[in-house]
Structure formats: C-alpha cells, structure tokens
Image (tube, rainbow, N blue to C red; front, side, top):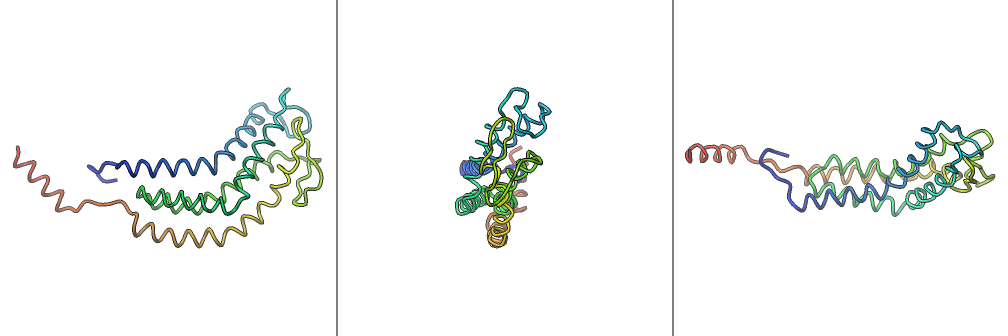
Length: 198
C-alpha cells in the first residue's frame, strides 16, 4: 500500500471475509492440534491409557470428526477456498489470494492427517478399509483415525483442479487486483501546491 493511501471500508470487509473463510477451513485442524499439543505438553506417549488422568482421546476424536467433516467434502472445500481467493483479490492482495486457492485445500486435509500419524502407535490400526479400532488415551478413535488413510488419495485427486484454479485465478488476480499506484505527476502536483500554500 502506498503512502497516503488508506484502506477503504470495502477492503476491510474483504479481508474480514478472507479471515472468516480461513478460520472456517483451518479452525477444526487447529482444534485437533491444540488437543495434540496438550498431549505433547503433558509428555503423554501415544497409547491406550489415559493421559495423566485425562481422556484426551475423546477430545481428539471429536476434533478430528469435525475436521474431516470440513475437509473431506471436496466441493465445500474448493468453494470456500475460491471465496477466500476472491475476497483477497477484492482487498487487492493478489499473492494472498493465489496462495489461498493453492494451499488452503491441501492444508485443510493434511494437518489432521499429520496429527493422526503422530498419535498412532504399533497396536493402533489406521486403515482406509476401516478395519480395527484404535484406543488412544482412553477413547476408541473409530473412523476418525481411519479417514486419515484416505487423505493422500483425496489430495492427489484435488491437485489437478487446485493447480488449474490457481493458474487461472492467479493470472486474473495479478492483472486486476494489483494495488493501485498513484501517478508520480499527481504526487509532484500535490507537493507544489503544498509549497505554494506555505
């Protein structure tokens, strides 16, 4: 943003919309990692026993269920990512918009999967067929763990679409959503008028 250029109300609204869409997609993954972080802080190794008297497995299971509800609905995932991209373009942030459509769908899927991979142990099955039931920190994880096994396939199926949308929307963003620059002659005229007023 150039000196003397103030953000308009519409740009504030667009940035707010962008933040809401990012929170909608990444918020559930953040909850998953908050629970995982508590286990790290308590120094609880993955296993069937309670984590220092806390049934953290139940919290992790519920957080994962919410994260998978958002991330495995590919139409919703891509649609919200496009809204985030267009909101960033409206706020004249073409780089932010381009990165939104490129990274948000992938991060929304991969972050919960990484949490599962760091919490599984030898007797904790994670299968795309849903075979077995892992007990972690006092709770059975069910499909909240098994869904992680299908994430790579979902990511690979999404990548052609997200890369195509990134290229198309990114080009539009750089052409039409670049920050406005004041013309140098206007700055010179303003300085001359200020000098004359003095």
